[in-house]
Image (tube, rainbow, N blue to C red):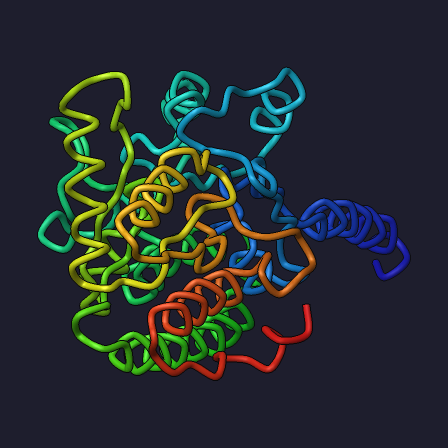
Length: 313
Ligand SMILES: [Zn+2]
């Protein structure tokens, strides 16, 4: 009997072995923006291969997928997107994959009552600008990835808790840094409307020049109005962004200068794209630290930087 069972046992072990070998290949998760892919990559560790489709300085509102992107999306076990029409050019590709249940729009898991208005059909998509909202959106993403590799669920939960504790600490830092700006100059002037969640969370007034056409009278009137605001409130700085043209922001600086008030560029902010992969500013914590610290310092507040890494790279 014993001898007779051995081949069966060998077969079962062989089948099991093949099964475990397959199960040991980590699933591939493709994130659209790095604001999703970077934190998910840290939290997944070696439990999943997490890639980001859009790189440094890329505008997700305008991005059109290449043939290589389509291949990566099709081959992915799971696609994590932002949603709320941020990835407008990827919409068709994502919709097709969503029908197969392979797409999770993480920003759309946040309750409507916590979101800000944007257009007639969509909420403001720039949810990552408020780390408390982004933590909740990422949590849903983490759960979906963990479901692909149940053996990793515990390890991923532990890494997620550590990551989110750091995001909470960053949130407390940002609150204090922005609050240190004198009330009069606590005004953030940027090239496009990406900072509404940031403004709401930390209590800084926003003025964006996006969509203003200097060809129209209404556009010119709006530029003049913003120049007056800068001059009257003695706001010392305005900001440019890595993924957006700075043409209109420079028009404001010229206008204020003509009225006798010097305004400088307070820094280049990361709005829709993060810094270079592998650098501190290429992480969600580093991006928000850079933005907060640049804004607070340029507008007369006090900010030491959330992490010493900010001064290094
Ligand atoms: Zn945007």
